[in-house]
Length: 187
Image (cartoon, rainbow, N blue to C red):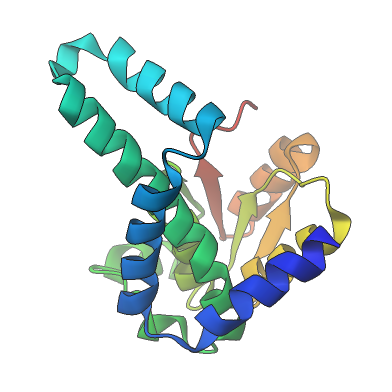
């Protein structure tokens, strides 16, 4: 049921321009922030612990709201990513030449990123022009997980689960592919 509801909710976003999706996601973040008690408490607490940033109370709240907005943008983009056949309409790599040359020489590359912006587009853009694998944690809803896997692997990349990550990651690097790692994964 949750899979059907999520897919139904995201369907209209597949047809919207990316700028509209970003606008809606930001606004939803501000509107939902007061309603999502657990998220709000965690975000405000974590930002308050970052004392080196010297943030005022209003800055902490603004950043927490923007964080939720960014998370919602990423979620709303799944509808667009599922439908998009040319990832370069959404994202482009500024300087792909060096990575392309390394891969063409038969060497592997490790790409390391964080859960910032939409981490999915990095893998999609990369696998649209070179072989790659990435480590991804399965989610509990098997229907939703299969749909997300189809999106992630649509340009020929392969998602590997954490329990296979060392073996399959090294195998990919040896064959001259890239290995994508999101930094908050505890491997």
